[in-house]
Image 1 (tube, rainbow, N blue to C red):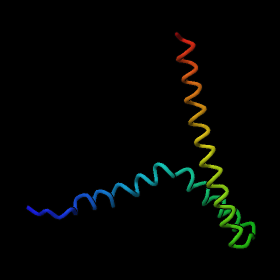
Image 2 (spheres, rainbow, N blue to C red):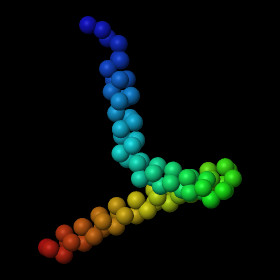
Image 3 (tube, one colour):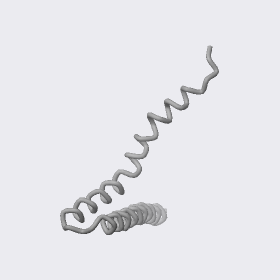
Image 4 (spheres, one colour):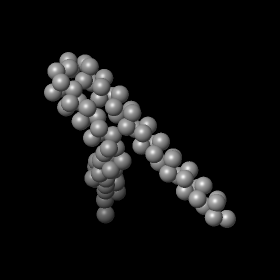
Length: 82
């Protein structure tokens, strides 16, 4: 029996990309879409990176706001049922 920690490393190498895609998927998609539309619009590369960063930040906060809003609504529903 080997005491090498390769099993944990292999699990991390398989699970980490899946976790990244699932958790950050909407943010990455919005950022790439903004970059593509900026590129088609003829914006220079530095501004494309700025647009992509701003869209990613905006998408992140929009998703956080939506999650918190839904949680607040469900909390209010539970409290009104009592």
